[in-house]
Length: 553
Image (tube, rainbow, N blue to C red; front, side, top):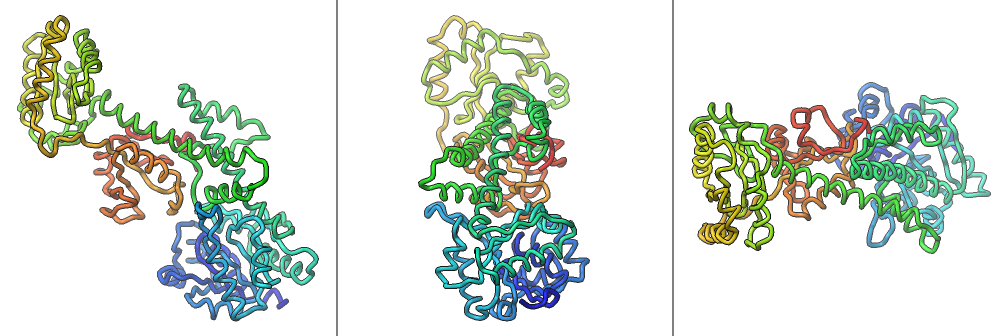
C-alpha cells in the first residue's frame, strides 16, 4: 500500500453519502469527486453545496480542502488508490431488488482504467451482493463499508460517527490491510476520538446496514401506531410516549410521531431486507412494511375529516369583502350592510331546531339525487341546508328571532345569496313538522327547475401540503411519507396544492400545483398537512393537521 499521507482518493457520486465522505477525506488527502450532473460539479468547485447540510456548507466555504469535482471518471479513477462508490441504488419494486446498475458501471470503469485500485462500496446494496460482484468481475479488490448517516447531518455523522464498520473477505491479508487503512482514513478525518471500529465479513457488513435501518423503521412505526391509537381513542399521545420512553431500555429519543418513515434509506432498505427473507420464516419485517402503508392511509383519512369538518361545522374566521373562499363558493357580491351584519353575526348561529332535525331526516331518507350539507358556513352566514352541486340553499323559517333584527339579517342573507348566484328555497317550521309529503315535493320541484349547465359541479376539497421534505432542515423529499399521503388524498377526490420553496412557483409536482405564495396557499387550503410543524403556520393553526407532537425530528 502507498503511504497513508500520500493517498489519492476518488469518490463516485456526490449525494449525501458521497459528498460528505469526499469532504471528510479531503481534509488530509487529494480527493476527486465524480458526478454526472454538471451543475453539481460546478457548485462544488465553487465551494457551494448542492445539498442542504449545515456542516457540508460550512466546510466547503471555510476549510482548506484538497477537493476537486469532475465529470471525468476515467481520469479520476486512473490515479486513485481508493475508489469510494457512493452511487444511488433505488429499490426496484418489480424485481424486489436494489437497482445496482450504477455501482457496476463504476466497477467496470475502474477495472478498465485502474484494476489495482481498492474499491469500497458505500452504496446500500442487497445482502450477499459484494461477494456476487467479486465473482462476476473476477475481482478481489472490493470492500464494503456501510454508512449510518442522517439526512441533512451527513458530514456531522462522519465527523462524529457512532461506529465504523468495514467488510472484507476472510483469509486475505492484503485486503485485511486495505480495510484497516480505509478505516484509518475515516478515523483520521473525524473529530470524535476512540470510535468503535469493527471488521467483519462482507455479507455480515451488508446485513448490519439493512437490519439497522429496518430497526429504525420499526421504531418509527411503533410510535406512529401508538399515536394512531391515542388519536382514535382521544388520548394524549405525548403523555403516553413520555411515560413509555422513561424506561432506559427504550429511551426518550427517536420517538416523535410522523406521517410514516421515508427518505433515502428506510423505505428501500426495509423492502430489500424483506426480499432477502425469501425462504426464511418471518412476521415482523413484513409487518413493518405494512404498518407504514396503514399509517399513511390513516393520516389521509384524518386530514380529509378535518377538511370536511371545516366545511360543515366551523364558522369562517375571515370576513373579507374581496371574496375569501368559504365552503366551495367565493362571494363576489358583498351584502349591502356589512357593519350591521358583522355586529349581529352571532345571531346567525344556533343549535339545530326540531324542524331542522326533521328536515335532515327527510333529506337523508329520500333519494333526492343530490347531496346536501347541513349548517354550512358561508362567510358570516350559517345556511341551514346547502346542495353544493346545484348551488341551492334551503332555509327553515320561523325557528328563531322573529324580530326586526332577525328579519333584516334574513333579508341580507337572501340578497347576498341571490347576488352570488345561489338559489334559496324557504320552508316554514310548520310544514316541515306536519307535512312531509309537501316538503319533499317542494324540494324536488325546486331541484328539477334548477339550471344544469357547466360549472354546477361540486368543487373539490382543497388540501394544502406544507413542505414535501421529511425533516425540518432538509431539502430532500425523495420517498417522503407525505407524498404517500398526497396520493391517497387525491385518490379520494380531493385537490392537493403544495407549498415547497425548493420547487418553482406555478409548476406542478405529480399533477399538484405548487403555490409558493404562502398567504394564497393558506387561503386556498381547507386543511393543511405538515409532517413537521413550522411557526409560519401559527396564524392558521386551526387548519393544520400534524402529528409533530414534540416539535422535533
